[in-house]
Image 1 (cartoon, rainbow, N blue to C red):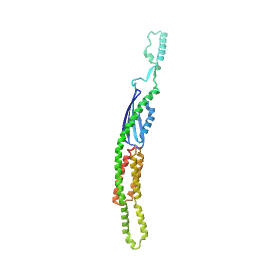
Image 2 (cartoon, rainbow, N blue to C red):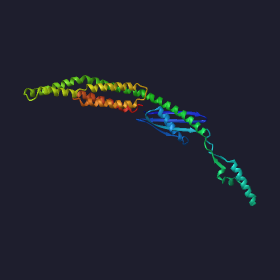
Image 3 (cartoon, one colour):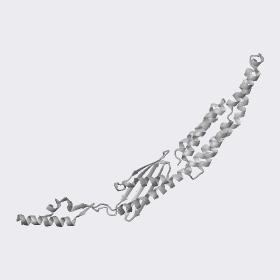
Image 4 (cartoon, rainbow, N blue to C red):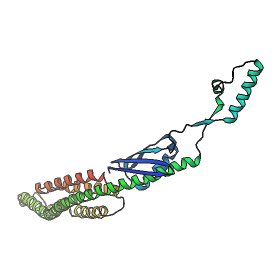
Amino acid sequence: MTGFGRGEAEQNGYASVVELRSVNSRYCEVSPRTPKSLNERESDIQRIIKTAFSRGRISVFVQLTDPEPDALPVRVNRKAVENYKTLLEEIRESAGIDEPVKLEALLKFSDVLESIEPEQDTEDDGWEAVQSALEAACNAMQSMRLQEGMALKNELQDRLSGIQEKLREVERLAPLRVTSARERLRDRLSEIIEEGRLDRDRLEFEMAMLADKLDVREECVRLDSHLDQFQEAIASSDPVGRKLNFLAQEMNREINTIGSKSNDAEMSHLVVGMKEELEKIREQVENVE
């Protein structure tokens, strides 16, 4: 199901913005894009999103603002500076050089500046802001998808009603069609029977077999049951996308069987109408979580 959600949060001096974008997918696929400092948190981001959503290809965009964005990742090693300065002054005196020790000479020693390793607590503080923003984004996208889901539910119910109306008409026509086929067969073979070229008992048996091949009552009952289960599923608040997809496949199977048993133009037209409605349902089911 498509959707968008945005969340913002501030924690411990950190500011975070998270945006989620979702497109249709049968499974839940999460693609996070985060700052390097959050690379180790990607599994946590995926876990939070997969807890909130069960379907959709979801892109995650995370921004994290450091409370001291201009701070350098290095600092002066004062002890090393003092030791090198003392050493250089001793060299200057030993060499009889009057020129004082300059900054350029000290900077040639690499360890007068040392890297600042981020503390674990600082990383956790930044994650708290991201987590709050991520949860807010999930809530926003859930709200948007809920609104879309209500509209989708109404459309699915309309499509189901269309299939049910056509199914009621098929059930009305089915017995008449069997009777009509039996009468046509009897009329065509009556002359042959009178001439003694066909056994009457054999004819009755063949007519019974024909009636059985044309009988669609079982298929209609099963299709009716699938329609009821579909209605119950879309009324549920639980994720039902995969169940709806399965029911749509079963409905398609029953409609195809009814179509294969149709030897009547009116019934064939009704079957085509049911297939059209079902195809719309199957397209929309891909949007259901």
